[in-house]
Length: 358
Ligand SMILES: *Cc1c(COP(=O)(O)O)cnc(C)c1O
Image 1 (cartoon, helix red, strand yellow):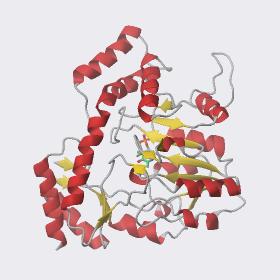
Image 2 (image 1 turned 135 degrees about the vertical axis):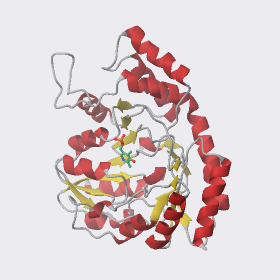
Image 3 (image 1 turned 45 degrees about the vertical axis):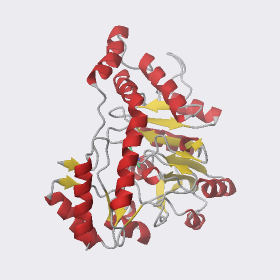
Image 4 (image 1 turned 90 degrees about the vertical axis):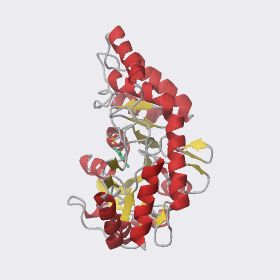
């Protein structure tokens, strides 16, 4: 069976070596040696000046919204994983959707201003499939209307935009280290900010608000990563360049061999150093996409409909019409993309796609 992705497992001896340290220290959480070391190594790898690693990639969105949203209206994208929209509703804020760009698949920055009201407090946008939003335009709008910007950069491990880590943009950026993501700790995530005060707030928020054992800076929740998760991260990280390189080869093979007469893939924004995290294929109609999906499924190949459905159509957000997002969501699928994917498998996938299209 070929799935859309396959978790990268480092050699177990290398994982054992890391996990042994937790046994030696008799220490499993509360920012132990492994978490601190992983944070340092990630700062170096990602070229960021600070990072707070967390137990998953959703709770950083909740924490950022909790600190920055003032329970207002949050401008967001309908084309993403549900985590962002769910976090907005979960934090008692109101999602206000803005449609997407049909090729970049990120929020259409030219439509943001029309959606701003006096209740708008923040923009939560996703760098979809690792493709950066138009961060400059969003920054300008945010300054003009005094809004906060949170980027769901769950797909963006290693992505750079204009020579800087993509995590350097926005008031807060978040990442996911879920097992299906490019770099993973089983479950895990991170949050980033370049604002010293905000960093302090994010930091105490992720640890119950603690100011030492007996006092509190303010309200907090538990978002700490454990030593068990950090051990996986430390074992995976040495392979990250190989992971990205292997994915790059697969993406280039798809690009060179898919018959693009009736389909297209992601348009990567200029000045981006991309991470080859997903391979979306967008068909002319849902019918054509379903036909190809069925052909692949019959051959034991399981692409995924990322992202479907458009988030403005789910039960708790209804009431917006997002024609581009709804249209793209109905006819996009992500092709298998992972380190172990064999050349024969890749050729078979491409042949099946090309022959079902004609
Ligand atoms: C995976 C993902 C998340 C959630 O991350 P978890 O680590 O699973 O909590 C958030 N946003 C997007 C776009 C994602 O793909």
